[in-house]
Length: 232
Image 1: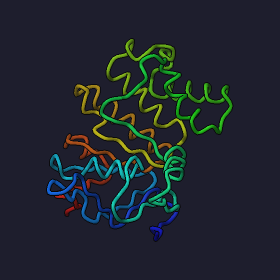
Image 2: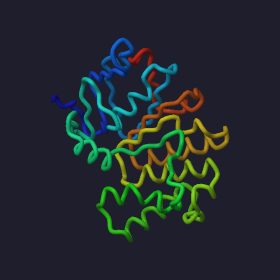
Image 3: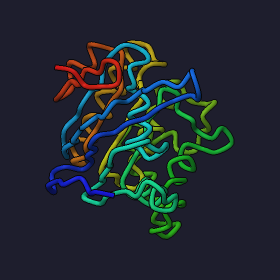
């Protein structure tokens, strides 16, 4: 496998990404050789019609799925296509996710949900994890609700917990798939502003898939995708 060359300012890069979905006559060429670089401290939005490959690209870059061709590099490290262990390690260490639906575990408190990624990575003591999770919840404005379960939080609050969780392991890259798609206008702007402000503070590379043109216009860069490729 070739390694995508990149400077220390580039947190994630891909070259020539291809992805097919389906089998036989229904097989579709979803991504057709996508190239992309994400720089630290920069927020990029991916926009385009439904079915153009936006979410597929996000899942490949987040190492949640495998490309059929092309290379991905995270923090200068080429990620082998055929090694599950490497995908898991790089994802835990370097990549945070925020989805349209928060995917919080309902039986756990906000604090416990934020601790989970740190426990999986296993680099901190339990007391250190609790301190960091508490600090993150304070940063997203939920310092007084650390022991509430998701059912005791509003939709906007639940998404803020999800943002805190995505930051738990100090990722270099933050990937967000329609992070405000399930929220009203007020909460959408609050969540977006919080997400981008914290990303700037932590100098993360952020890639947001969105159908919301107002949110996209607030990003540093807009990438328009059509039929499996970026277009000018």
